[in-house]
Image (cartoon, rainbow, N blue to C red; front, side, top):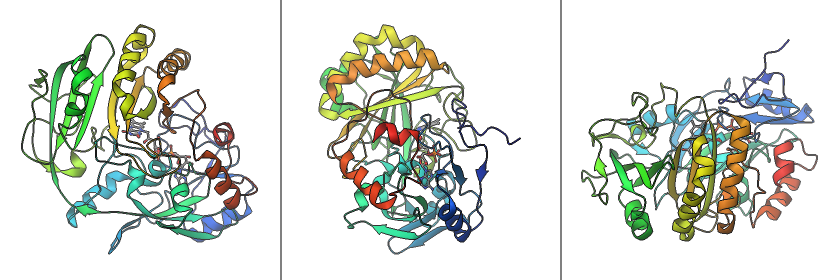
Length: 404
Ligand SMILES: Cc1cc2nc3c(=O)[nH]c(=O)nc-3n(C[C@H](O)[C@H](O)[C@H](O)COP(=O)(O)OP(=O)(O)OC[C@H]3O[C@@H](n4cnc5c(N)ncnc54)[C@H](O)[C@@H]3O)c2cc1C
């Protein structure tokens, strides 16, 4: 009997009893062409059932791990992870504009769910994509480039249009960063200084357990040598993990030590288990103009969800034009929750958070746990694009049927 295939968190056993690992694009095309139901699995770090299928689950891990720097950016194969991409780009003198909290994730899977880092001027990771190469339902190979009217719908594609075998990403010149951690930012500071706190670095993250009127930690990643003032928060006297009290060994270097972008932008090092390991996650992103009101609404409701929180992270993401990006058309703030690994307790907590954020047009992260309908003004256009690409629903799954 085939082993049960689960996601990284272990909260989801995929319906597929096995994973296909084609060794060439031709093999993949033939597999897709003869399948009535098929879906790509990236590195399996989503908590939602976005990657699940009752048909054939396909990993691209056995395909060549292409990383090809060209005049227009870097072209990566469908299974390449950020952890292997970062050092290669740096050695060649290049960088990506941003990374998520962990480098373990695949580029294609991250782009498909609009995965993001933080930074007022930084769009999510999908905004770096300039071309996308897909194996479509009939086994054809199709390339869409920025400028094609379908492109903005296809990039954050939830795996619905086909299997992505190549992505071209924009590059910037490589850069060094320094990371500073501050502790004990009074919550009230955010009422009047939210924008200044987030302007404190290239990428800023606030961490709170919602246990009291305090932001436990502020992580500031800067491209210069200056350490900002943080409104009364104290500079940490040693390295920290976002979860107070946890060993900082898995975390990227702090205390203002300079290092390459790929070793500072993520919070976690690739050779360690990121975050808590035993956990579930949710995240809701809403228009930045509602940030302080939403913070207040969550603080008021905190007694009903804080006991289930390991840590919560607040980040900013710049507006983009990708149809299914939570930042479509507007700068957003993301409220992320790392929960204890207890599905029933977490479901109740998620509902409380969703109710508190309901007035602020919050959109859930596609790869994390949510129960509300995802409200997207371009969802109708996306559904029509999916019908054009995949009229028979070869890439459809329960998740897509729920959200579309
Ligand atoms: C510890 C931890 C920390 C995280 N931190 C962050 C964070 O900082 N910011 C953030 O935004 N998110 C974060 N996430 C969520 C994570 O980035 C997303 O769930 C992301 O989609 C994971 O990428 P993956 O390769 O594992 O994708 P999977 O979970 O494997 O797949 C996600 C989706 O992409 C599709 N897909 C994957 N590969 C392909 C392909 N080749 N072609 C077509 N479709 C494909 C799948 O079908 C599925 O629909 C975190 C998750 C974990 C576990």
